[in-house]
Length: 424
Image (tube, rainbow, N blue to C red; front, side, top):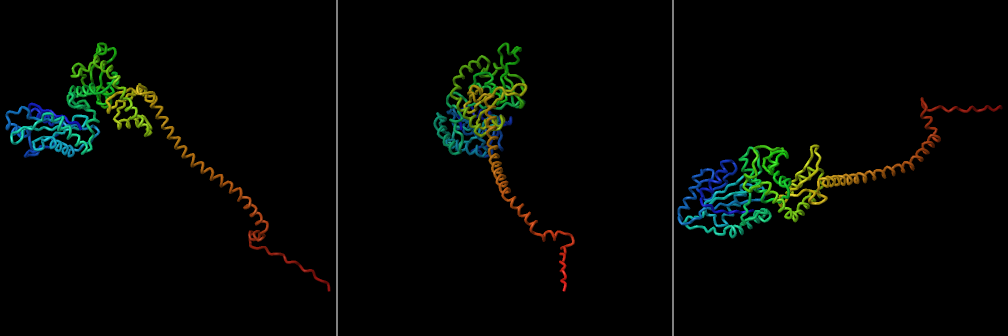
């Protein structure tokens, strides 16, 4: 869990920021703590009045507003009731449990997060000290809450706090939803500052997972010839849609010249991060994927986004891996011989062949047993058959009764011997 604390000059500005998100359908007010009414029963002015009543008790204080965002890993699926428990416990632990505060769940980013608005003036007119609250109270309590709720630790999320780098909400741009320029700017700014890429195709591989692409246009076109660059939104099928946004109009200035500087800087920074991506791929192969689609799906569970490059005939000629855990982008061949597109195909074929051989081995073992059984049976027949034939012949020869019994009409009458008369 990453906690970010700010102290805006105006409570109205902090409240207005969150309420506008609610009006646009990008946030919802989950809870109003220490108010007389439920959050759903109050409008903007009623919520504001709860803060202003206390703030009016201290005219000398200059810092009267507290605005907090609690950010969680994209892998965490947190229900509203759990988010509320975390928010209430956090506010209690940093000394704001008795203050009125509003909890907003924002739904416009690629990771779950909540915003909390409160004030620093207590009911007796005294002010809660917020000096170094982020480094002192928040840091300690944040770690305890992570353990208590089993949350992904801030260190693992790779977020840097108190260093001037603000965590960026990387929003998946969907054409027709929200302002196109804002959506593109947020995503491009985040990828440009956080990901390590060493070429335009690698930069685009990282952007593509958020439905954005950097486009130089056709080689014969004016934009390409003038080394220009525009950013476009991609639809669900990867087609460019909407109005292109000039690179120079985006805050971080991700123009081609600045990107090329990034390419040179990032190349050595990527090197120590290779092993993590290679291990993730090897782990997926250990599960014996049967196709490239199975491999891509397995890699997604390892936080690795895969871009397959195919020609017009559908033949795979290249692969790029975006490791979202280390935020590093690699061409397959850069990872080593065993990770190029051709090598991956070969490894898949080998894995499938081994599986078939194992199945054939099992089948061959059972058929071998059957063959032995048949041979044994034949040997038994060789022993038994002659005696059976001899016995039947003797029965036929020696048993005249059998012959008589088989004559139609029953037993044949024996001829009586005539006695010769003796002459007296």
